[in-house]
Image 1 (cartoon, helix red, strand yellow):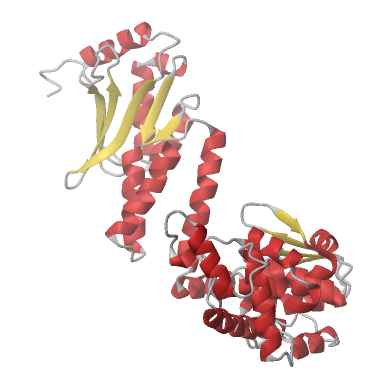
Image 2 (spheres, one colour):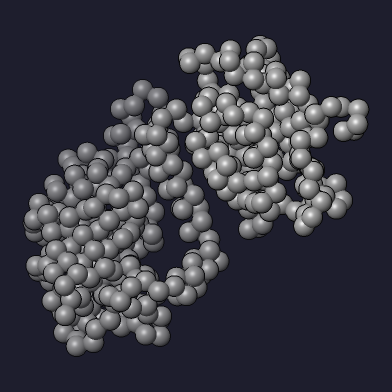
Length: 437
């Protein structure tokens, strides 16, 4: 081919590895003209470089450009390289020839798109340090597919993660990118951590890493508690750390159960050290300030949380924690605390549940929950969905018993008190202690 096409072969190396760089002189001149015609207001000129074909004992890498002089912006070959290995030196030799043919690359607005191969990007950064590098969207989508399928994901999982990637790639500003990324990260994290196998693997991974001199990894066998629920164990460590003189206890969690337990025990024990809970989005909640604002109503916060839905009780349809907190504030203080209190009678629990749900649905004047259901139903012009009505007396009774057992288990009164007076000390990965002796 070199015999018939003058100037087509730009370089040929035989030893130690075969590298042949080729480019049509006419195409090189066409690209130079395109650069001269490129106005400042025009988007940067795109070049695409990829090792596209494995043809037996050697590879073919192509450098393409989009021809902006045409409305269709056709992709046109500029140069090719046949090489024996996919190492950085081969790609450096190629781009050195390109720079020799096109010294304008260092002064014009050029962007090179690659498939994120390290050898290629390192070679470009070394030979053309001023030229920005971007990554090919198609390759990113394929990477997502291979990664998800490699982790046992289904076709539907691949489509979800590719849609998330497309959302990120479509952002028009860095601020929008970070916002979308935060939303997607929360959804992905929740889905991953709902899988028990993923939780176990995460625990194994964390146990193989050094996480600093001030944090000690503990297993279930080492733990100062044997409770099955992690949030109860976590609060136990918080109390033990506070008792031992920690000035700050910082817990990283998105779990509402943990927040409620921190508020309750901070109030109940009278913790004076600085308690913080940091959510995954970076929001830091001041537990001490929350306790100060709620005051004695902290006594009822566990009952409020269990009755309005937690990890072991159901949620009233359409009623969130804000509505539940407002209902707690209007229910008498000497009523709700029976939910979870040792020795509480069935009548006391029933009255506490009735008062809470009547307040939650703004029906405090109703004689019973059944009457409240009827009043709400008959006042609506169109029949409301039954799930949006207050629970029946029977269902409220059963819900109250579940909430009672939940609160009683969460409190673990005797166990926590024993920990509070114990002399044993350890740390858990979820806690970060400052100024601990």
